[in-house]
Image (cartoon, rainbow, N blue to C red):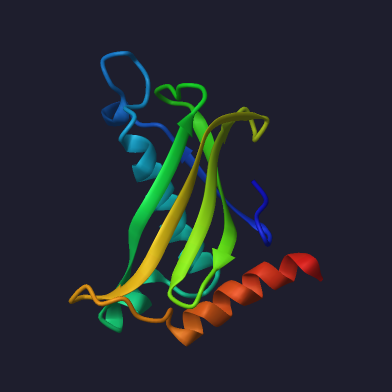
Length: 143
């Protein structure tokens, strides 16, 4: 999957409370990791998610696809890599991957599609400042 700009990297140590009876990260908790990485990504691009919420909007996930390749274990340090695949007028698609072993071993990947909506659930355009921050992030890789 080709992303359109540079990547954001987020490191995380798998805690014991995220592990299931099979001694691996519970499958639903992968989305927890993706969420933590996205939250860090918004801050890194200079537009914390709180700014979207301050405008009574949020990015709601409308579609996700996750491929689990290799299990993650307690106490492993993993890296979640986030890339922008598409910026629409109201939507955004991110490609997120989880690696271990210093980024050498792909364990999980997901494509997350989001739409900007008001707190009342009405789809709206992405905030212009947010869009500019995203586009700047994407373009910095190309320069």
